[in-house]
Image (cartoon, rainbow, N blue to C red):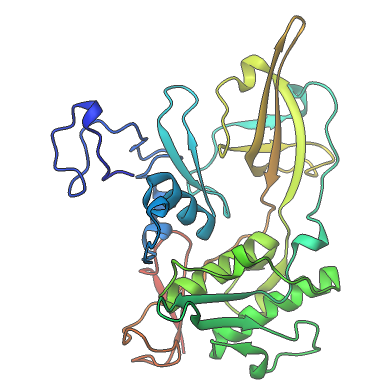
Length: 331
């Protein structure tokens, strides 16, 4: 999007080779901007695929494919119409400045809704590295037997070591909460744009996190179930007039959040302006209170090999947002 032709904006750069001077996109370092620090882990991903139909080359189609594949949302700045993009599967790296309290809410507050069990997939898998000749996927990471009493290395395809055990434990934690196995939809499992092993691992780990399987310390025993919950409420127009989808705030209520300030992201927003009723109503996703770390794997490897073919033999963990550079080795 940043490299496309912005000639209507009198941009003098060579489009496709340099960023334009005045694109109609948010290039700020704020939440929603293309240079926001929270997108760094997305920028570490290297998607690639072949476009075989003319319609697939349109910018909006490419954006849809990338957003669907990496837990992002593309939307417009409500003030000036500039394009924005946000990663929604985790908390913001910048602390939200606004905390909504009971005194600011108008009218009823919905119950706190946990995810439907039908939307939690205890045995997810990721098919990737699509072979354009055969039309099939050359690689797969699959979790099986989530309901087993204990981990067995045979239950995970495509991974090994501590990483495999952590992934199975996340599946097991989800199964303990639902006690049912649902077949995940193909748009969650089949990824034409992922070809690197490390990106497939990142995707599966992020998918687990979104479903509520949280990695707190990088060990199987540190996996906890803390699902994202939803809640709806309204605030006066003057309070929420500048709010927009994918914006992060905090919510502190005596019962719904147990008087604790919890971060949320706006999933839906409705502006109601009429005589005597000027309200902003939102549906929010509550992130919960569990502190989560990211599972990063960073090492020297030979392109096209499996994850177990490393130059070194150890596992690495990193704090969120470091891109894998802040490494703590566990021998």
